[in-house]
Figure 1 (cartoon, rainbow, N blue to C red):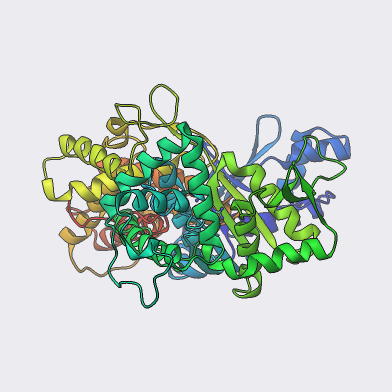
Figure 2 (figure 1 turned 180 degrees about the vertical axis):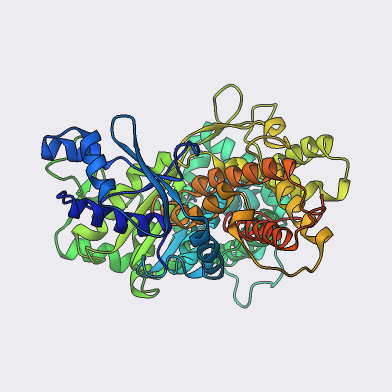
Length: 570
Ligand code: ARG
């Protein structure tokens, strides 16, 4: 179905044409409701083309514009066209609109097989705040893409094949050298049970990682193990599998807490059978060359404003790296999963890596030129000092502790203990999502948990309030009439259509957050001055209930698209 802005655009464009102006006119919502519900500012740009004053052009256009959906149309200021919508039109429109909510985008977006690469946790390393945004934003982007009709697959793309694996294996070898995984002469089956627990991993990785930074010999040992793991060492591989499984079990618990769910639990290692082929392709065709012992391929282009370094396929010690695994993964996504679009939800600081990855893949014809490869970068969550958020002793803050901190803040603000988990997570997630993706922001649990302002708890609260009104009123019947409702709210509801398309195009969950906050606000201030429960006129009461129901439907839809769980009571 057509959006109201589109219907109006057609009507005004026709009027303009009759008045002698040829341009597809754009309609936007009007911020000042006193002036109008919608506006058109195109007379300004037409003025330059037709060499007339914008006010005259605007007047010409409205003199030729007439339609039953327009209640009033006039010119204000230097040539703004303001439009008021007819309430009877709105009565029919809004009902059909809410019934069609899930198909709004269908005629506007051609569905694509889309893979969302998000989460990006690293095996054996604790999940930290940097992974929080990827998980939250990625989950929401995946839901938005799906909602507008794409076939989506969310892939966690675990970091499970890099140097940290060699480090962890080395750490385990030091603690338990007697394990069969380290016995080169071992034949037979390796044990089924993991020799390490998640707390072992949480202990081993930080200590060995610290040591590799201070001691070159340790680093060399870790590198050698990584190389051996990548080149078929059976014992290391069997142990590696246990480490991965143990880590995944723990990660799933963390992601579940955040209401983040992946369709694919693949990782860097899943394309390990392809690396040789990929590398050979570049060697055979003379695309690759050696640079300081490493094997690289050029991606720079003539018009580059900054230097784009070559793309590395193999390190000087012979092992593959992040770029190799990402390239093989991209090829697999194209070939095996028939992906037409891949969206990478990764920290802004990796932008260059992805720019080169996309170039390599297309320049050397490994994926089609028209495959859509999108880097959806995000900013950092900082502490009050403006630096990436840390624990009190200066370490990396773990997700678990972060949630704990927000939960404590939420508990202070709410007296119902059992709801505080959902409220805390809503606070954390909404804060993460409501900031423009590319921006850094400051972690401030006090602010996130407030029940006033643009916060998760405020939205949950508004939704439960609206739901409780409906519950109190109970089943009623009557005739829906927009004239009884708050026009601002009804128009705002119709604007969800424009918002979801824009949020999809910009991969911007924050646009949904802004929209939901405004809708909740309008609803709350309307409800503060209107009693639905005591309304005597049954048609009016029914209409107000329907309006409330529409608000509930849309707020629930948005919270679901943001992957924020809701409550029935607060
Ligand atoms: N594991 C990486 C990290 O922690 C993020 C992975 C992002 N996705 C990708 N395809 N490279 O930085």
